[in-house]
Length: 463
Ligand code: ZN
Ligand code: MN
Image 1 (tube, protein in one colour):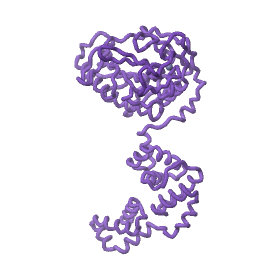
Image 2 (tube, helix red, strand yellow):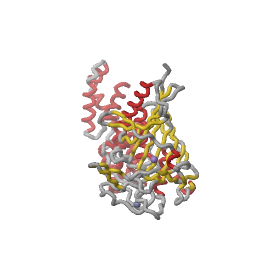
Image 3 (cartoon, rainbow, N blue to C red):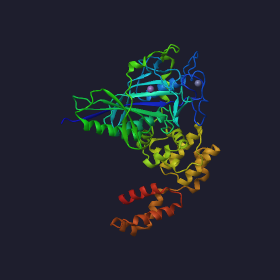
Image 4 (cartoon, rainbow, N blue to C red):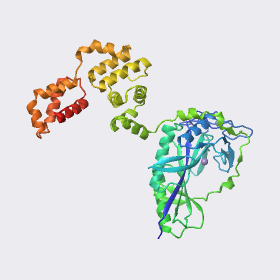
């Protein structure tokens, strides 16, 4: 039997975090609002109304395009996509057909590039609620801006699909910052298509629709992957089938067959003029992109911080901003100490800093990193710099008497405990704790145990 390969493509709808809806001024946040109260003639699709594009939604789509390495197209337009459903009063959805805002692009997972086909912008439909043999419609969601991200079928396993979705969620939330990206609130919705081939013959493409969690999507794809491989080579002659997923039974089941693209009778939206990209400042959007959590941690580790401190630092936005205000002004070797000082609350307050304070704090942190002042002194000095706008030198000469020299202290401990040092060197390694204790007592709470321990180790090795 030849080797069977799986191909998976994804379509992800992302609800954009704009203030108002896509083509009207209705509030885009209808959370906890009564059904059909966040609506107007435009999003209700009443005859004679005219849509007006929400520029913020376009801007956010372009930002996402930049975050996913897409080509931003010079010209883009909206089209009408026709279909009938009770949650769509207009009878068509305003979407984008052949000229979307973004084309191409990719997202890298596990060192592999998954290509994107496109990112386009469209409006959401309302919601149908089925209860007691009745169907009710809530149009609060109608007209919400939705960004649709379509991948090429480059994903090779259900697990990889899960990995892709989790990374995508982080990027729309933390890098492009275009959506809250909450699965529970339905900000992210995903469809997938999966097929299996032996390099020659290909199975039908199974489309999985409306699955509301990444884990369920992974499970449903795993079921289809196994089923298609088991049925090989007796695959359906049909090219495309649609299936749903029942999370309680962990089963997939057949659904209505998908309409082909031609069935939607796309044509250009006559009420909205096309867009020219030179109306948008892409450079500004680019510089506004953030980093995702993983790369933030990786960058901090590259600067010499420990993983625990890096995680702690980025989990507190105020502290992370404080760190970034000082980071660029400080000499590189002192950056780990800066992180440590912030994470361990050596600063009396974490606030916005002016240039003068930054200059003085930088001197204090560099002095602490070089161990020419103690931790206790640093706490006092930084407090006076921030609260009283004094200079580092002024404060140091005020409190000067208390200065400690860790190097001298360790020498003193070693020379007054020569027997223990000898015994340590001949193999009694447990004496390190004793010597360390003596150093800490000597420092009277003013020294950093981690630095002292490292210095003591170095000295014991050298002697
Ligand atoms: Zn409206
Ligand atoms: Mn769509």
